[in-house]
Length: 107
Image (cartoon, rainbow, N blue to C red; front, side, top):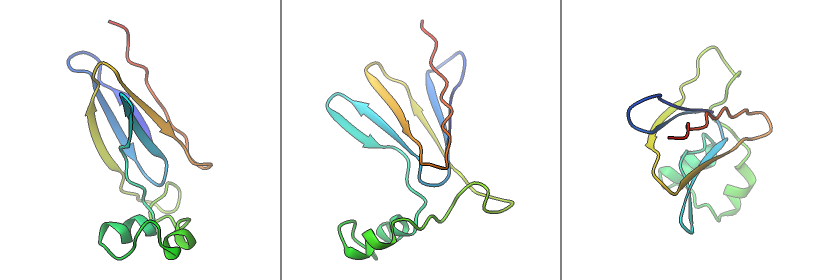
């Protein structure tokens, strides 16, 4: 996962995500998962073929469908989010992932 901010202009967060590292947004008392896991179970949930609380979900949740280093080409998800006052983003890397975060400059 790469997280960066464009200098100048609007305060935007740019994210490129592959695998099951997660980016979360904290606003007020709520926490939201921003990125989507690239896993077999999440793909099945997305098309309505599996429920998150099912035994199949728990027994197959370690199957990753996209990851760095598994082939010559990998397709990341790209996201852009705006920074707002009172919003916190945090990255939860997996054991095989690294998160780079650029801290917004104080203005």
